[in-house]
Length: 525
Image (cartoon, rainbow, N blue to C red; front, side, top):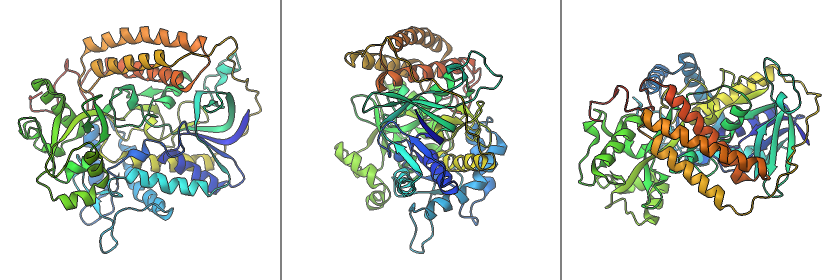
């Protein structure tokens, strides 16, 4: 068993920001960061567009950013949280810049601000089209300079430890005492006992297979919190990014940033029709849910596998300057942006729900916090405003840090049992896990995607129940490995998405059910 003062699960912007702040404030305390891939692999790393924050007080204002966020959230945002995050955001970004993060500036050294869908002003700061990667680089560099931070790459958190692991008596409020962790190199499972634990484990896009998220985004933190009886909400609100590169084989892959549409690109069907103005007067700059459903509608009408993003009318040299990563990725796929349209489809991109937290990042379990995409703060409501996610991660990491600093958790003296896998055997071959993972992903794309209906959701529920029992049988019989643990987590997350979708009786934001009022569109879908 290992003991630590602060356990952080996840090494993206939220987790590393918290780790740095705790390490600097408490140099004699241990901070342990568990991450299941390389220490730099996270959803943060793949964020292209930037971070939304109000820096131009002549043209912009906190109130405008607040209003844009509330409009995108479609009536389900927590207004107090929205105001808190947006007003605190610039301070957190200035802090990040002091730590070494570089953002694009003009000839006078002023931040260059972009505009994305749903924003009324230019307020998105960026580092070309690799903003997340730059933030991750700066935070890792800072983390590795602090001796009391231990980052454990290739370690997979399996389950949170609560009273049900060591006591038959269940208190009214459960507490978290750390986690059981799999060393993916040795295959051993050990205990990390912690004074407090923070989930910063990112999203769940891999539940759908076609996603802009990296392979690590399997909803692990949400699934662990669910099994530990933490409150989970708003799982039906999944943001599908309208423009992920369609590779012609397995659907979506590389993200074509929303900033490209902000730069002036048009969406066209295969006949060349610029169709977005038929759905919303904002055209390509409508909110992501509307653009995604419009593309879904066009694909269903035509039977085509994708639509196209047309950049051929844009200044190609300026395009290369702003989007070098996108230009190069398209070029490698034999798409010359100067003369070719980019084939795109909607893909699972961001989860607006997750583990419910208060304004200090506290979950419903004592000594368990959550921040970043795995959390449900109330900022996004039914639909996230573009580039508000990294902002939320930075602000909530700071809120958790301040909460812990005010009320330092005490060291628990209870004895926690070792992980017990007696009687289990090694699972031979990975084919069955791959097969079941693909079965789950097909089920979610078919029945719980961009557009849903109650009949499909009921079908999904029945099919998922069968898959759940099959997965649990594998879990009970075999020694755990990463693939089996991820499948188990994705089944749990899929269950939450489907059941909370069935409970939603109206269309809001990113949730769209054909059986309900076709809100937010001009009767075209």
